[in-house]
View (cartoon, one colour):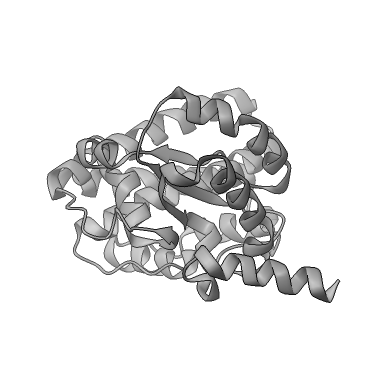
Length: 259
């Protein structure tokens, strides 16, 4: 057992970077997956990075997905075919489908995905090859436009989803818990638009949103605790909590519209 562990550690340190910055559980789960992809396409892979909750203080073992990206020199459908069987096994271990990109796709898509690329640029750990996001220039106006589109789209979806709950308390609570993760990229972008340095902790993000968007005692903190299993929104009437949640997002959307 010790010898196998030693060989594993020796192997990964030969071609991986920054593993000392990666959560031990994330490393244990992800490295065998990336090893397999490197084995089938080694000469074609320019970069591998982890991003999102897997590299943030909010990572929860067994609950948080592991997000990753691979940058390929030659980008075609054969890559997906070669990696399909490898991912099928990884999917059972909380590894999200990785982003497969090429350098030209990144350069030519920064105006289309400013929020997504900004998220990756600000919160990633490069573990192999070259960092293609470090010097990426993201336009303020492109970011503002997508941020406005995303938050208004989220409001529309929340309204539709509420209608489907039939005002059932448990279903309303589930709606809030299931939607909260998709709100944080928008909140981070909204803070960036105001010129604020964005922390990696979601609790700190909520505190900054309260301060900079004039929101008192945000219900999002309670929803986040519910999602983490640290508390329940049960101290609120579910419909009243949803009303507060909806109104907070509406207020942020109105402010973004004026930026």
